[in-house]
Amino acid sequence: MSLKGTLGVAVIGTGRMGADHVRRINEVISGARVAAVVDIDADRVKAVADGIEDCTPCTDPAAAMADPAVDAVLIASPGPAHEAALLAAFERDLPVLCEKPLTPDAASALRVLRAEEALGHRRVQVGFMRRYDTGYLKLKSLLDAGTYGRTLMLHNKHRNPATPPGFTNAMLVNDSVVHEIDTTRWLLDEEITAVRVLRPAPSGNAPEGLSDPQLFLFETAAGQVVDTELFQNCSFGYQVSCEAVGESGTARIGDDHGVFVNSAGQWGGSITPGFVERFEDAYDRQVQRWVNATRRGEVEGPSCWDGYAAAAVCEAGVRAQESGERVAVELVERPDLYRSRS
Image 1 (cartoon, rainbow, N blue to C red):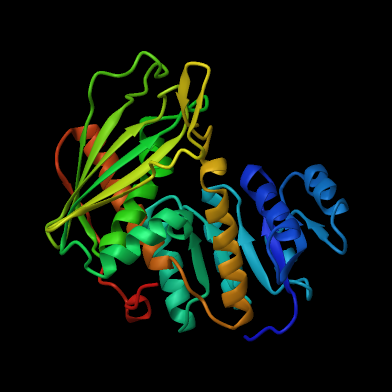
Image 2: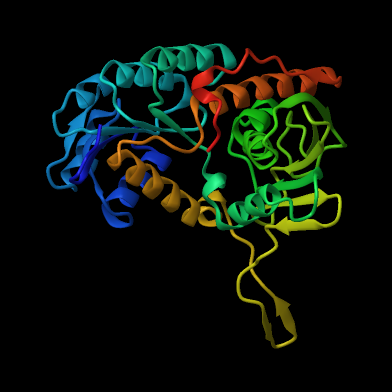
């Protein structure tokens, strides 16, 4: 499908991420408009649609996809609802930008992958937005060029001021470390083959029952080792960084704290309060790239394979959390449709 005009997008889910994407499409990026919004909350979705010209409110994703004004779909609903929405989009051969996770587990992600494979062409870009962050893009370019020789290790930090109520140890993997899982696979162009998790004495800031911080260790098919410090109740702000260690040098991103000031006996910069502020530009770039590719009749970026592989590593990570043992990652053979990486 090659679209010449403005892309009509159905946004499924109008919670925090969905509402932010509605704003992004309406006010920030070019080449697209919100043609329909979908949410199970009829009052909320009507309120969102009422603020957008020629936008149809729906409570059923399939109904929105049937709207002739809809050319593509952005899925920002909770993870358990993704599979049904993706399969409905495949029935109409609609391009999709699906927020992570592709689906909440490897089995359902594999079903989606097989359904897309049956189409014979890609339709899905998975929303791993760090791949569109300026710092990560620069680091990827350096590693691909072999600037510092073969990459031997990655050191990651992932800190958050606090977790919301009800946050569990499994969610530390599925909602947080999943980003380091994807960036590891992308930066190194290798699959993760095993996971270990070390759990130090928990911080006094951690909610009861949550083991925080944790240290995740990944092994790759090429023998590289990756560590990730995850500290989700650090209390002082949001920090994400990655250092690549090569044979002849290192490269680190994530240390830019904005303007550095000196005043009245104080010096320093600032720390972003959350992921939305830290990766706002990456989200903008991700959606713009998706719109541009879709209008050209192309699909780029993280694929259903990437979503499936991340889910499989997450499952190994949760088992490693629970057992304290090294857990191997189990993957099916990579289909030909997903052999080339973006």
